[in-house]
Structure formats: C-alpha cells, structure tokens
Length: 107
Image 1: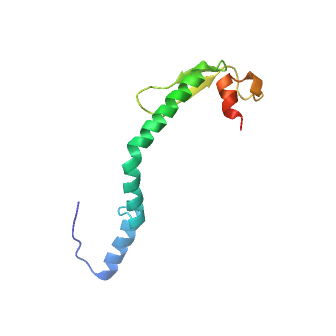
Image 2: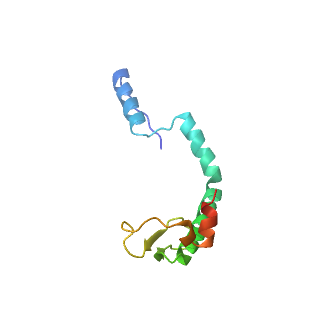
Image 3: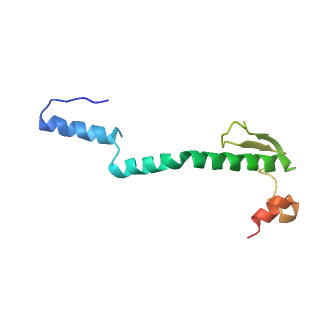
C-alpha cells in the first residue's frame, strides 16, 4: 500500500511520530532480522513439532500424568493433567521417575 500526504512540515512531523509509534514501519535491523528468521522458520517449526511429539509420548507413559492433550497436527502446543493435587505432593525423587526422565535429568 502506498500513498501521498500533502501537508506542512509540522503536520508531517506529527504523522511520522504516529507512523513510527504504531509500528507501521520496520527499522532496518528489524527488517533484516525478520527476513533472516523467515528463512529458517520451516526448520524451526519441524524441530518444535518433533520435540512436542516426543514430549507428549513421554508424558503419556508417565504414571503421574492422567491425560495428555496433544492434537498431533504438526503443532508444538501440549497440555497435560496430573493425577491428584499437584500442589500437595512433594517433588518426585530420581528413583520414582521413569528411566528416560532420570537419565535426562542427570548432568
């Protein structure tokens, strides 16, 4: 979209302030970062989706988890419910975690 505004310098200055304050124009660094990020977006989305699928699989196998909500349509959003009241239980010890979680938490 383009346009022309015919006005005096004072009004033009106020219009420039509004334009920059409302985010209508990217500054050069933001434009560069946006283009750079868009180039790798498909790779990052695939990696996030794969990580979410693995996390959903591990949560489903965990006996402390009641339900896992994961749409499996290529997204990275996961929600899960735990058994009982999580605010009343103590943190699990390493021996009570599944083997994959124990290995992941060991430095």
